[in-house]
Amino acid sequence: MPGFELFGAEERKEVNDVLETGIFMRYGFDGPRKGIWKAKELEQAISSKLNVPYTQLTSSGTTALTTALAALGVGAGDEVIMPTFTFVASFESIFSVGATPVLVDVDDTLTLDPRAVEAAITPRTKVIMPVHMCGAMADLDALKAICEKNNLILLEDAAQSFGASYKGKALGSIGHAGIFSFDFVKTVTCAEGGAVVTSDKDLYLKCDAYSDHGHDHLGVDRGADLHPFMGQNFRISELHAAVGLAQVRKLDKFLAIQRSTKKIFKDALASIPEVSFRRLPDEAGDSATFLGFFLPEENQARAAAAAMKAAGLAAFYWFDNNWHYIRNWEHFKQSATLNHFAPGLQQALELYKIKQFPVSDAIISRCICTPINLGWSESEIKERADKLVKAVKSAL
Ligand SMILES: *Cc1c(COP(=O)(O)O)cnc(C)c1O
Image 1 (tube, rainbow, N blue to C red):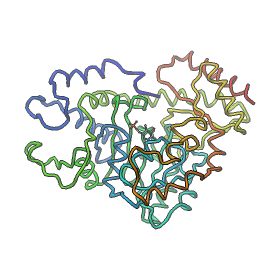
Image 2 (cartoon, rainbow, N blue to C red):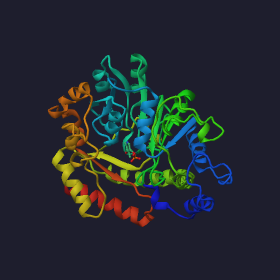
Image 3 (cartoon, rainbow, N blue to C red):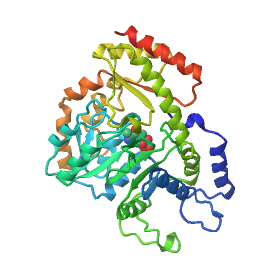
Image 4 (spheres, rainbow, N blue to C red):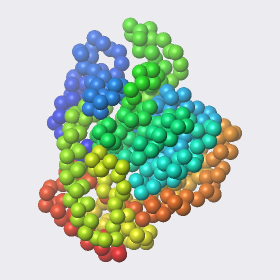
């Protein structure tokens, strides 16, 4: 799963290029940087890898989401539809532009249920934000059709799915904009970093300026830039971009390893009749960072996850996890902030103090995801597949 497992000489070489110039900032210093522009190079590498015209790097996946929302004109009073199963960054970024998150059920794809999305649309809805969880895709045809019918923006959170695709197109490149995270545990890592991708030039230029205090980057130097609007400092550093550049070049290798290992695990588990698998709208496009499966009952899934851990396997039982599923987001449910929300937003959030999500619960409470690592040997994979089957059977 995480690219850091295969960190090596290639990453060191790219970082050393930057260390030799001593220029760690991605903008300016044209003379002393001696032609080294790692952030620019990484943006071009991502654009060409994903076949998308524009890439704007940022300091993280969370700031990429915030940047995209701001550039899309999302703000106070606007509603953004997001799933109950995601990462806390989804609502954090929506709050940071002053907009209102609207939480909607997931289905057996572990991503937004298109029917639940349709039912949640109001006159204030501006964006539908599917989150392509655990390496694979939401039902993008259905979500795109809903956006077109209702004149809404599709913003793909592909933070966990760099390199995955849907019907031949890279995840992130299908909506109006898409974002990725390159944090330390993602498929490709910069240590910390993120990106917004889009085919809309105007949107890209807004992201470019917003993520650097509103600089238009048109001046002869930074001091001569104009500031058409206010922004933030969400810049990535040259050191981080250098790591990412070496990592992106290894993406195909990561994907090949993940796909072949995942198939072995999946084939092994398929021998157990009680196991069903996460539904993938386009199986061929799965980046295969995780194998997701369901057991018939909540208690069986919890017991299977515990048995897997006892056998030395990694198992995410999201229902009990407090980063990824609404059940344990007490701070969100209680609107706990250090400052305070605008009055209307505070009111809109009141419902989450009591709102239940039985449909999502029925899915997530029966689900286990096991990560696919990059560094396992062939014999280790075989041994792990055997242990996986034994652990799951012991819980039935
Ligand atoms: C990791 C992640 C993010 C945020 O990325 P950071 O780089 O850690 O800020 C956003 N959304 C999802 C689904 C993620 O998994």
